[in-house]
Length: 163
Image (cartoon, rainbow, N blue to C red):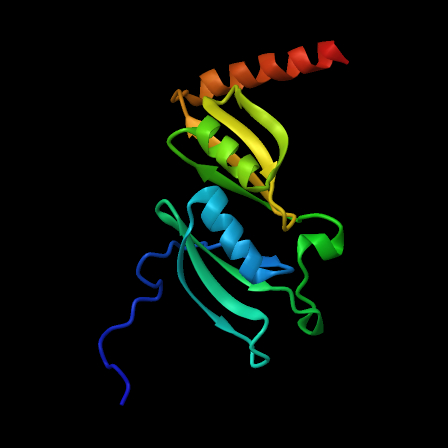
């Protein structure tokens, strides 16, 4: 018999948008995310072959994401198979420097060192061993729109002068 209680259209603990990432080796990816980002696993289930992960749930801080192995027969590929990612993930943490270093030690590739960004974040960027881009940030200053526009204009002007 079905549970007849009211069903929420968004499952408990989820947000309106939940990233689902595709990787070449789901089991290795889950272990990496646990080690590098402190992810907690909420469960996983496999395809009928018992090898490919059809769906795994992970949580970092207060946000969830899901993961699946690539499935070429369904035209679902990882960044490693298509030559790069088509998106990136933005991760807010208490200490971007510490988190960034932890991820690099776990096997992520540093692509942008942690720096103070013009919009008020301290942030850096990494690529995980499965080809996904992660921006790791800590909010340091709350800027008004006007302050951010001014800081952005100054930043981009300084970048053009360097060229």
